[in-house]
Length: 326
Image 1 (cartoon, one colour):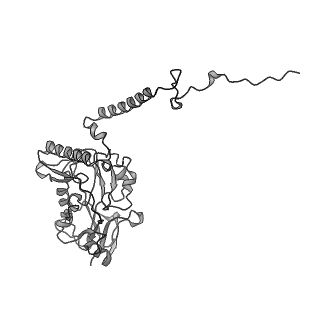
Image 2: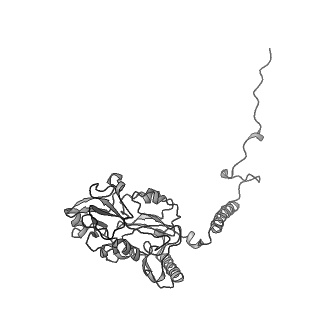
Image 3: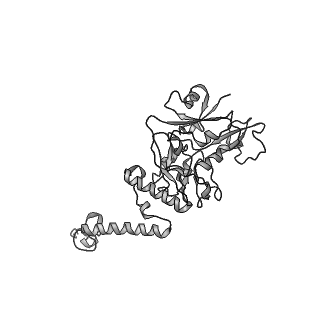
């Protein structure tokens, strides 16, 4: 009989080469030198930064490497605000004041809009443009969009007209439905942002740090209200029309390639003022106030009027409410 033969054994040469993750240098004979490992890591990071800088001459490395807004110390924040003011001076030749005032304790903002009173005059649209330093032309950006709808159809986006032109408003058989950021309690835009450039503040305002926005527009895709707007070009803002009273998370001038939206006029309301759109409305269709204050106008509306939220079925829980007063 033929004797049994043992199975062949794989030689050591067939073993896979060691990985740097194992702490062994695949080129040398010993463990990877910690100093060399740190060098490789730093070199890789440097290469990435250099590649970013080569892609755009407008990239500021100090801004790129800056900590998140919520992590800045008071001194660091002061330097950031001073830098924004300096940029404004260089760009517009105008002195500005940029605040970063935070939310006030015991305040949660809510907004009410009386559909039965709105006449579709669009004064709110242009007051918002003026107050919040929005691009005038190419691109023209409006944070508030007024939809004209047919009374016979009710609130029906399929029959809504954003670009209506009328010699006089309101037109017979029509009603008007302004839409802007709903400041959702469950904001899908915040969840979609890959860089945490947008978040919800304690007073209910959803904000954006334009220096952290990478312009991916994921938030725009996530927003079911079409309330976010992208700067395809450098915003066109004449220096003589610049509002010098600014907030870092609000109406400071935006660069090309970032997303922007309504912030309830954060630069005004955190100073105890009404939003620009509330003040300009000629028929008193807009109401604003502190939802936590039982005596506030918005609370009175919530308790006594027929109130609803836009696209309630999506469970975004807006802090922007529509109602019928008559």
